[in-house]
Image 1 (cartoon, rainbow, N blue to C red):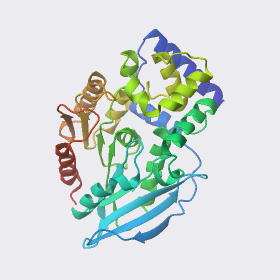
Image 2 (spheres, one colour):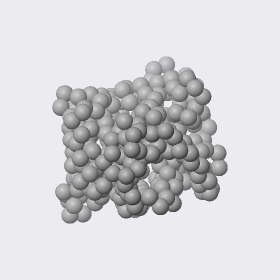
Image 3 (cartoon, rainbow, N blue to C red):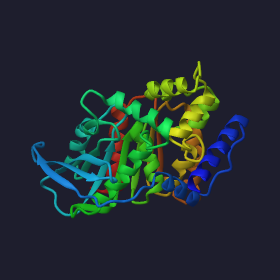
Length: 347
């Protein structure tokens, strides 16, 4: 029954996209439920493993791992200052495409010096979770495999599940304040940040960097190429499977629907980002970023502002548009994000 319903849903969405008719929005509760049902899988014991590593002066650096499901263990790093005690606020930093948990160490060390616990994990098919030197290859192979078989969701969704399991793990720790856990993410990690925060109320605050966007707007306005470029090999091979001589928006949509169902429909930015209200949210994007085109971004922002206004929490939502900046993080924006986290999490 589930397989039949899912196939019917895909056919319906394809028809909607082809006709250019906007879907009727789900209720917030229904959207959360649908997304959680999509990524759900049997929960297994976390079985955490922890080992101390050499860290910065006056700090502690730990390597850990836990079971996300029956087949996947998630490796992570945790950094905290030794001279702080009691339960502390946590900031989880999510890397972008091609990044690793270690790429977040500078930020984690700075956060630890301010009294936070800094945490990072390797996303699916990144870091320790792939063979050395095979990152882009395995990542694209996984997406192509999903396109062909429907198994896994290696782009965004599986890492959202991993982050939710990371929250499960953090809440078992005696040094973590369960009410002060924030997410910050960059590019791919920025998308994972807003998706996780939208469906998991345990995220107390969120800072998606250069990730908030409308996939549907990009498809409808021929502005999808830069985003697709992050998994070009996978989509080219999928197009070859289907005998598509040229990749166009309609095929990109079909690829999305198999690899990350709903990302251009009910789980698109304008539908998901508003679900974070009324919790503190800081959105940071570049004004010339081709991966997050401004009109689609502004649609997300307008709908999110409306949600915060309805929740009477307008002061909890802020936006920083980096001037004359593409798909990058400026030092000014990074500093703003850290100050904003200090304001809301009180380390």
